[in-house]
Image (cartoon, rainbow over all chains, first blue to last red):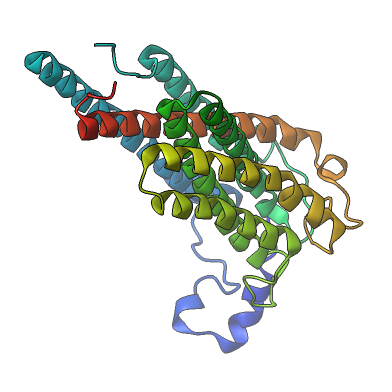
Length: 85
Length: 241
């Protein structure tokens, strides 16, 4: 499951500020605790899962909001028509 | 006065909530791995991106379902002249374009980091990609055609005829032609087909994903039908109903 970050290790020779953490160094040294022990496992795939779920829950929320809005307009149109009849 | 046409709201809410739960489980299944549930086989170049199978491919199945629904209602327009059929055909064609665009975009991103990795290209006129783009354009033209006709009855009938033509091109552009040409997609010119290379464990998520996304299409399509029916009642002040 762990993919060898070969390209990143090679970049130690041309190391810059932004890749100094990941380029082959074994930091952070202490074992992750709490939520990090879950989120950092399996190449941090759970972070991507969280992002996908946030997007999906957001889309569901918007769909429900639109439904409620449609219902409101339908109701008001209904009462308008019965008024004019 | 007869009651204005509407949709079955009880059925709509039931299916919508079912689709929401179903697709949430699909997303969880798509990311499950590492001995918990579904450990997907490791394939060179693809690696974890093989999981895109659960999202990219159902976009095309959903688009095809949407074009089918649209064509059916266009056929009914020509049969009955019912404007509700035209509203349904139009809403389904709109969702076909949406899912087609999502399929194209996800395919571009997937290809960039697998087929074209280290080649630094996003688009290389893979026949299946090109034909899919043409397909989306054909459906885009449906809306251009509609907007060019003033009379609503004429608009409904001409758009219906065009829509039936557009539907006939779907299997040719998405299946027949790409398989005759050199494509990197599965099933094309000498490549193994989907059924030969997809591990059974991935089908446990893939097939439910197709059902879930077609369900999502139905929810969004029904929403647009409701909106169009409301719009029509506002525009015509109910005098035509």
